[in-house]
Amino acid sequence: MDWSFIFFFNSILLGAGLAMDAFSVSLANGLGDPQMKKTRMCGIAGIFAGFQFAMPMAGWICVHTIVQYFRSFEKFIPWIALVLLGYIGGSMLVEGIRGGDESAPGRRLTLSVLMVQGVATSIDALSVGFTIADYGLLMAFVCALIIAVVTFIICMVGLQLGKLFGTRLAGKASILGGVILIGIGLEIFIKGVFFS
Image (tube, rainbow, N blue to C red; front, side, top):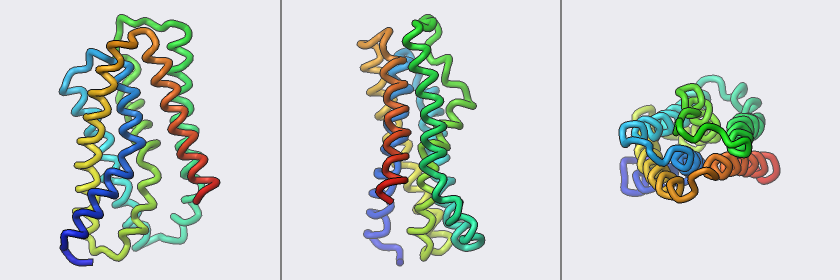
């Protein structure tokens, strides 16, 4: 592969495809905190973008070093995503049903929760390392960087939409956010186990 328009176009499309789970989780996060500030939004989108950058690079490195170990790990990716997103979404759902303290918006979005969300939504991007295995290190790096930038933009849109609808949904936002996260986990699981 050379430095062509097709390389950049494919990288952007790859980024858009990989960012859809992160978009949905960002939407749920925005729903949970309609008063979220721009700096917090940038931080959240930055975490997702960072993971979407790191995972394809990790996959690329695995292909070029320990490919046989990665292939055996790959079958667990849907299970990991299901458990992580199911747990976070279930917690949000239970708290929303119980009528958690609405006076503390965004309190559930600690750094550790965001890290778990980042891993859960980007773990399937490890497989991208196989699709970009014929790239050199610099091209793989640029491709992963493009994926990260696209993810950042898409997550910012998701957070903004979540804030908009979160203001309108007030007390039910946590329930809706939890359902969305559980749904994403199930979608990744079903797609990975039954259609891969």
